[in-house]
Image: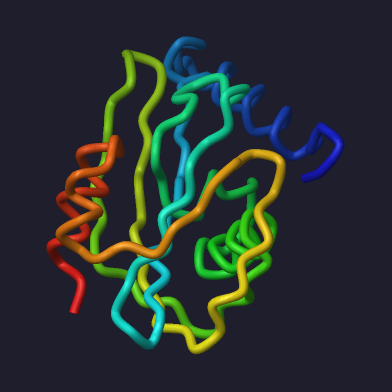
Length: 158
């Protein structure tokens, strides 16, 4: 749901759970689905994108396209949307290579889906969220300042 609109069904669901005796702290736990995609060009190089200095979580670190799936969105559609928003690249048929999860704290759990797709077009148009991009080998990706789970996932690429 865009523009922070509230779904009345959500409130009915919460009300019913409260009436059934479910503790509020168990209802309000946040579950997040995040997606990332390794974009591989015809030369076998991976698109690495650097987060801008204004990024609130990991400024000036390397990443791959992706993001959080919107409520009700199919992750396979979400990764295509996120990739186009961040790089201008339109994916056709991304394939999952890794799934893992992370308990951020007692109230937040993230499930991370990692995809890949081989593309023929090398044109990249970065969003404001990123300031640099480069095409790197799998080995060179391991040397970047990137998240550990992405470095583990790059080893699973075909």
